[in-house]
Length: 143
Image (cartoon, helix red, strand yellow):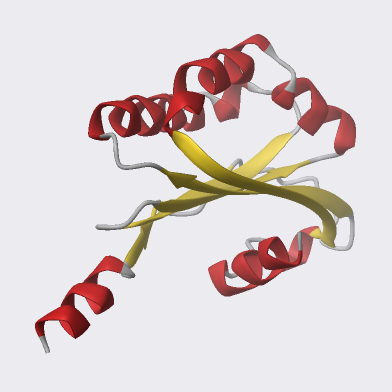
């Protein structure tokens, strides 16, 4: 019974609220780009703290990037898995973020904690964001 509870609790997940940059002049039928990430961190708590600190610091800066529409982060409460979802006006905006100095610095700082990663990009209509976390996990499993 105890091991069942530990398994159940370790798979509980929590996410940041969906944060969206409000704009009055957008077409709900317009296609946007969704960047998805899955990460699994190792057992080193010091490295993990650095990873999550840099991840959340970067999330707080996303609104500064041209083309950013919205995003959220989700992670297991007591586990080692996490997911990100960021929505962008177009591929070019997402590319500028991914290869920009801040993101590259966060990768360099946090990557020692990582043991597994998956990435996906999809296009959806703006009216369909945010995606459900079940959908995000489903899409990343295909990668």
